[in-house]
Length: 272
Length: 138
Image (cartoon, rainbow over all chains, first blue to last red; front, top):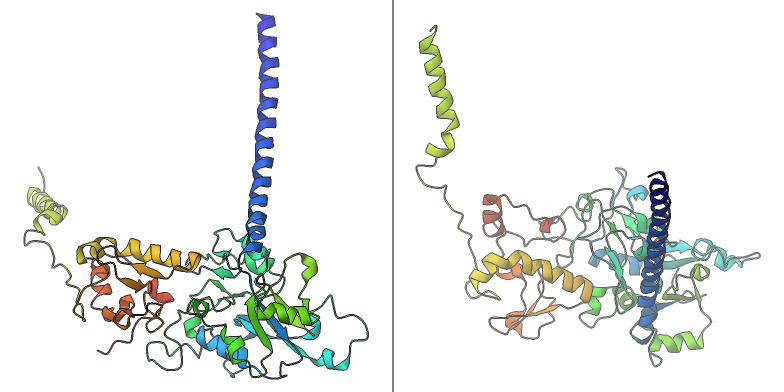
């Protein structure tokens, strides 16, 4: 009797050790395959379309805000204002805007920067990364990478956790702390003045960002910022298409990407 | 027994209140909503199908448009093409002008059409927190 009890405990101990080992092995393998599949999706896109932009900062006119004005108007981006009429920076929503050179390229603005560049502001927007960190962290898959390389948001599914905002190294995402329809430019909804009825607004508690004009691309139009740029500073196209205009521009110019050292693979290129 | 009168009266009132749902509905159910459609003609599918399945259809549409960029719906009943669009008009990808419509092109009276049933059934879809309903002239 004494023996069998001892045997039982031994077997139970060995059995539970084996069981634990198998469970942890399975979880490690499962994790590896899930990472591999998310990376694999992006790699598979190399043969398909990958939309991108080249921004020629030499042609971009300082103090010009046409691209962001047009974008924010057609996408009903709220323009929150403080009571004194100044922009409400805490609640600011940005799809495309301008940043100083040193903030746009912090890792590429070394010593002895030219005066021109030190003063220059560049157009920045979502980089529609090849390996988008925002997509990786989104717990609801509200943000995702479409087959044509556009990093899109499904606002229906966004729960407002803001993981994507923490993950995005470019600050391309804005959170609706306030009801967007309370903004001065969208208050008029229902009275048919000054806003675009064709594009939905967002609601309070969701994150939003540039959609590379997915709704215009579907109609065969190019993104509004590219179309309306008065300096013709932006080129839009398929980065995977060797014959495309954007590839010609990339081939004939020296370009840089924002924070490319992070491995995000930005699809927005700059001629500086 | 003390206070027989009070107790019996109280019991009668209690039973009357408790059984209110039974005798209260003797006059028949409350009036069913009658959604008003402003524009005559047919919908993308039969009225019976739309009545039963519009919510599923809209859910499928939003997923396929946002996720898969598939923006045209082919009617299973009529074989016609339609934009998968709740509220935008004039952004049609379909070439025929008579089909350049969204749901709200015909059902432009949200209050009399959508809300009449949704209020009755106490359903609160959150379409209009983002999508912009057509302007209604009342």
